[in-house]
Length: 124
Image (cartoon, rainbow, N blue to C red; front, side, top):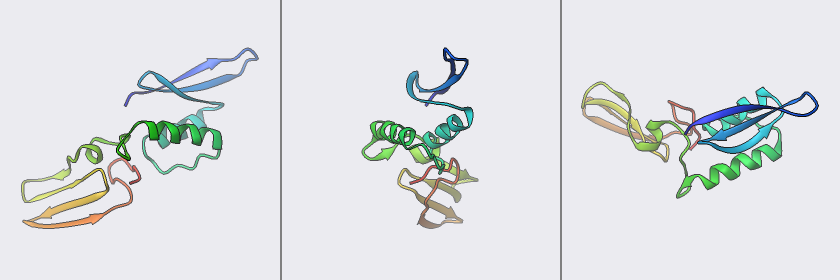
């Protein structure tokens, strides 16, 4: 996911911030702080966006870019079932796309559900 922002000058000396994901414009905001919140929201962080119009646009974008209900926006570990921690074959931890963390310590395995990815903060 390649996120870029553009600052566009308006006719009356004001600026709009345009958020583009993979070259496709997603939304426009008034200020940089709101743009930062939009980027965090698309990255999976738990952020409060007060503008209902922008939140609706971002939710629609996330829904259109999901795989069978799974949000494909997040880090590599929670999307592709790779290791978060790996010391050796007996001591490792990984998380899958549904938020189930599996830890193996000295041959013993424990699995539990988490609400957020410990690596990127994406909500499951």
